[in-house]
Each structure stands twice: as structure tokens, then as C-alpha cells.
Image (cartoon, rainbow, N blue to C red; front, side, top):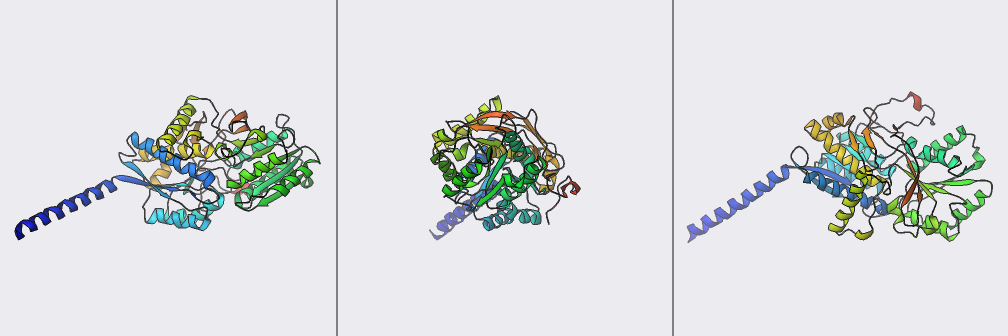
Length: 421
């Protein structure tokens, strides 16, 4: 009996060991990729959908055979809108989870927080949101817009007859690096067009700010001095009370148009958009654009949301940073397949010149030197259904200028990626 029990025990332990070995082999056969987005806190309203879009894109790539014959395995972390925690989570993904690449961040302060980590450890970050430029790291690929692919064309549009021929500009932003640097660039640009400082007002609010009553009243007072436009770099859930206050005080787009750089279809989902009709957003993609790539992209996203039972699955929308996430992950997969490796140095080299037929309807190209996408620029008007009617767009994708010509000394900076430290 004892001998039989020992044989059984040995057989059982051998089976468990074999199972453990098979799990180890299985784990080794996946490629881990990091998803670094705030799923709680003030930025969750914008970033949660990027996490879900990343997971959908990874599923699609796996369905086609993965990367270099291996399945992608997502490692999702929540830095909770806490900027120092972004750096901690980035280090964890690279050193502990051993991810090959990270897709993530929204705010520039979160990107600035993780940048030293990626450069120190030679990690790779794909950053999917429009930003202020003034950066070109070899460890980051920027799939969102630089200022010349969003902010500058938007203000040029506001100055035009079609855009309302604005003479005065109220710059309203959340108080951190992206709005302040973008507005520094815009102020210099406005000066170059003959706009005086007395016709530019600059106001900042903290993350999570919710009381816009006084600010909207001040916008109305400022607009009494001449044709005025508001340029909004408000980020996160503060956009909801800001737009609600515009409606409460009856400030219509026909009186004072607002152009936003961080408000898309996702942020408008929780707002009655009827009073906001005619206000503007500048992006490189809108859900409403009509082409075969976008028809599939939107249909795939809606089907995925339903299959995964995402919150409010019946009303999900696509937006610009979601498209930039989708493009970035697909481009990384193309580069890794081309390099036959997920090694950061090899993928970096293979990324130069990668192209992708994007849902925007344009074929996007990763610049060979500056790590930024060539992107189209679109201006959209808010419609009463929460979508945007594209009222202006470029004919071709525009090459990014990460170093803005409106900041003195930038003409002497190199046009290739260099470490920030």
C-alpha cells in the first residue's frame, strides 16, 4: 500500500511539474506589451477608452498570428492620474514584467514623468496624444500631433473668414506643461500675425476643476472688446463642467467659438451637445470621416465593446487618440515583424518610414528621423448628436515640427531624436 501511495504521489508530482513546465513554455512563447493608462482619477474619462482600444488591437494582431509567430500578452497597469506613479509603473513594466514595448500616457506631465525611466532602461513608449512638442526622444514614438499638426492650423482657421475672423483670443487651459507650452507657442504665433498682448487673455485651472462660472463670465466680458475665440487646452473631466457652464450662460458658438485640442467624441458622450453646436475641435481624425478603413474601424470597435460588455457599450465612439493608439500598435507590430525581433534597438530602426492606411483616410508615415507621424489636420464642428462635421482639412499629411519655429533657439536644435538628459 505504502509503495503504491508513493508511486501515486510521484506520478502526481511529475504531472504537476510537467504542467508547470508547459505553463513556463507557454509564458515564454508570448510577447508581453505594457498598457500604461489612467483607469481612475481625473484622466480616466479620456484614458480608459485608450486601454480598451489597445486591447482590441492586440486581439486583432493575435488573430492574424501575432508578432514573429508569438501571441501578444497585454500587461495593464493603472497609474491612477498620479504623475509620479506613472514613472513607478513604467519601471515595473520594463524591469519586472519584462514588456517589449509600452503604449500609454495622455498628459504631457505623465509622459515627462516616465521619460527618464524609458531612456535609462532603453524601453520603448508609444505616445498617442497631441502635445506641445519640444521633445524628440529615441525611446518614444509620438503618434499624436505636434503643434504644427493641430494648434497652429486651428488658430489660422479661427483667423480666417470661414472661422469667424477672430481678433481676440482667450487661452484657457489646465495648469501643466502641455497647455502652458502650447500657449507660449500660440502667443508668439499670434504676435507674428499682429495680435497685441491686450487682445490675448491666458487663464489656467487645476486638474479636476469644476467651477467655471466666473471664467465663462470673464470670457463674455473679454469678448465685448471685439471678435473673440476661446482656445481650450482644458484636459480630463473638467471639460464636462466647462461646456455645461458655456450652455448655462448662453454663450453660443456664433458669438464666441471655442476650439478645443483635448475634447473629442469620448469627452462629449456625457454632455448635452445641443447648446454646443458649432463649437470646434482640432484633431487628425474624427469618427465621422467616411472611408472604408474608418467604416471597418468603427464597426470593429462597436462589436468589441458589445462582446466585452464595456460600460455603455451601446453608445461607444471612436476618437483621435484611440485612432493614434490603433495606428501605433499596428506600426510597432509591422516593425517587429520586419526586424524579426522585439529588441528595442532593432524595432527603432525598423520603425523609420513605416506606413499604415489609417482610419483617417490617409496613409500615415513614421518620419525617418524625428519619431513623429506625418498626419493630416482636421477642424470639426460639434453637431447635436455628439459627432463632428469636418469643416476644414489638409489635402495631405503634414510632417511634424517637434521644435516649434515660434520658440527662439529651436532652429539650432537637431532634427533627429536625442535623449532629453
